[in-house]
Amino acid sequence: MKLRDKLLWAQIPLALALLLLGVLGVNTLGRLGRAGQEILADNYRSVLAMQRIIEHLERLDSASLFIVAGERQRGLEQVNAHVQPLEMELKVQEGNITEPGEGEATRRLREAWKRYRSGFESFLAMDSSERARAAYFDTLAPEFQEAKAATQEILALNQDAMVRKSDALQRQSRRVNTLMVTAVVVALVGGLLASASLTQRTLRPVSVLSQAVQRLGQGDLAARAVVEGRDEIAQLARDFNAMAEALQRYRQSSLGELLQAQSSSQAAIDSLPDPVVVFGVDGGVLNVNRAAEEVLRLSLEGGGGPLGQVAPEVREVLERVRAHVLGGKGPYLPRGYEEAVRAESAEGDRWLLPRGSPVYGEGGGVVGATVLLQDVTRLRRFDELKNDLVATVAHEFRTPLTSLRMAIHLCVEGVAGPITEKQADLLYAAREDCERLQGIVDDLLDLSKLQAGRMVLEVRPVSSEAVLEAALAPHRVAADERGVRLSSELEPGLEQVEADPERLQLVLSNLVANAVRHTSHGGDVKVSARRDGERVRFEVADTGEGIAPEHQHRIFEKFYRVPGASTGGAGLGLSIAQEIVQAHGGEMGLASEPGLGSTFWFTLPQEGEQARERPEIGPAT
Ligand code: ADP
Image (tube, rainbow, N blue to C red; front, side, top):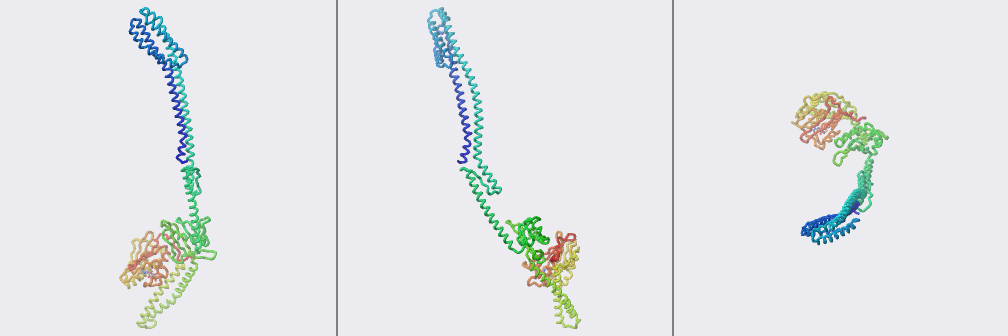
């Protein structure tokens, strides 16, 4: 059955109750009406007839008195006017005998009337008024009284009956009233209850369906609506069940795919020999590979946080790289093997070099960071070997180089005897190359000291102006010779900087030497220092040849030299400078445009500012 039909059926008890009440009401009203009509027909008609008969009798009596009084004509007219109507009323009464005793009284009336009429005939036949008067008093008057008495009896009978019936009617109407009120209440309550229960039964499937929908909404994909029948709600329930079924199947299949994808990606990172740690955007560890668990003792299970078991130095590196990547600074690339951190493992110490890459979300924002700790134990050993070799070679070069320089100097001065002009030229060139070689050897020694962590910074407040001047002074002659203008600019009131003056001077000196060397005649080299937030920013700007973009990002690498550029050293100056600046807790960078010039800059803490996490120089061996 359709829902509409069911709802219509649910209204039927109420409609039936109303129908019953209507029928009862019409019936009762009809009965009351009929009872009233009965009174009218049975009694009121008789009462009316009797009143009229009395009226006619009275008139006939007065007509006979007219005749007795000599007014015969007038009396006769009156008689004629009343005899016939009276006769008619009497006939009406004779046909409407309803009360006990009424028939007897009516017969008496008929008798009396008959006698009155025959008496009246003889009365009219009297020739003298004396006799007429005697006839009136002897015959007519007693018959008149008799007829009147019978009429009044009938009248009284009917009036009494009317009063009685009216009382009975009133009682009946009160009873009917009570009955109707009771019937209305019973029918209404019964009809309403029946309708409500039917409606509720019809709509119960809706609540079953709604509960199932709610459960599904809360994630219970096994929720189904059990609704019997063929109406629209049952159809809706069947559709809902089909939808829940499809959803469950889809969830199971997508969950399966998801699990498969997750296990294959887990297998992929597990297959990497190097430890990998994936951090979420809030910094928490999302995933680790097997190597991370074994080498770093990093575990997602267990208390104290995943990083709790990790050695402090490794944890510090992980946190630093994570902060770099999640801070939106892009991928983290190590500067060199010196950044490798030592991790103890069952197979001996391992050196791990951190790399970090951002994990991008759908919107393009960083939603995590992947940190890979590349095992560079062997490479680092090679690097150490190379550094040792370089340091040894540089060290071993120093003494012979000094003797060589001394010997050339003595020859040039003529101490070893006179020399020809040509010999002098050759010796000057040899001396210049010796100087260059000495510079390279010094650089190599500086670098090896830095890398071996043997260089100790003596940080103290230093006047920026003094450092600037000291760094410029050694290059003035060379600048003059090349026709390069050398100038400096200091922001007025600049605080002192926290630095090791000798190292700072070395950095500036390296930068100025490079700038002068790479700037052609007529160019400018400007050294400046100014406040940059909490720090002091030093800049060495030249109007020289500039550096092509493809070389800029490698310029601070050790032994890197721009191919084809006129160079003075072994490509170590900038990397030494950067090491020193970073050791002070500062940063270093450059901006350069080929053909227009380069600006090398670095920042240092101002005096009073606590140098933040100043890294140790060289690896923490
Ligand atoms: P080097 O001691 O050999 O000059 P550096 O590390 O100081 O090594 O410099 C590395 C390379 O950077 C050099 O080969 C040089 O070509 C380039 N370079 C350095 N400074 C400048 C500059 N101011 N203008 C152009 N090129 C420069």
